[in-house]
Length: 203
Image 1 (cartoon, rainbow, N blue to C red):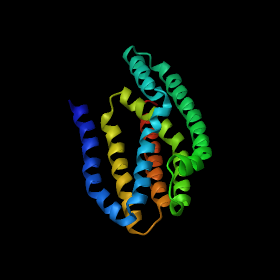
Image 2: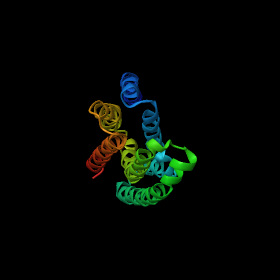
Image 3: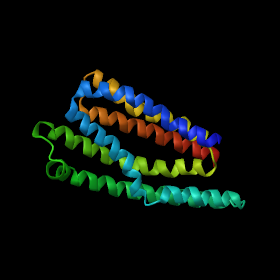
């Protein structure tokens, strides 16, 4: 019940902030640029599909190893997942970089005046793929030991930051690539936090 409440709070609080922040963002950067920004949020969220279930597998096998008292098996499970995720992330980043022009010109048919910004956005998103995938392994380790308090201590601020930093950047007059870069910086900070916390809980 406690873990469920923590996870529910971690979902609801950012949602409430988003309800306030999004209309201001739309008025500040315009509908077209907000469309690209919302696409960036969506794409980053769906990068975890590329992990092919490795994050959840790490959670399952680490939990089982702890359950049977085989803590010595955990490092092999953990680092296998991390290395696999990192390799998948690098491949995904290269593919995203190469297909970005096709996405912008042929798939999404971005208007010419937004083309340069859109191209920069998709290439920046590619850099975030390894970060998101490896984060899934480390956050999966925290799930395996039922440390949802630590998980949400990272997820809530990072989810809030994903709204508030772009909003602050938009109000300061920054361009769309800078707003997407701010979202990636939040993800990198979350990755570092998940890494440090999992190494502390499972040294």
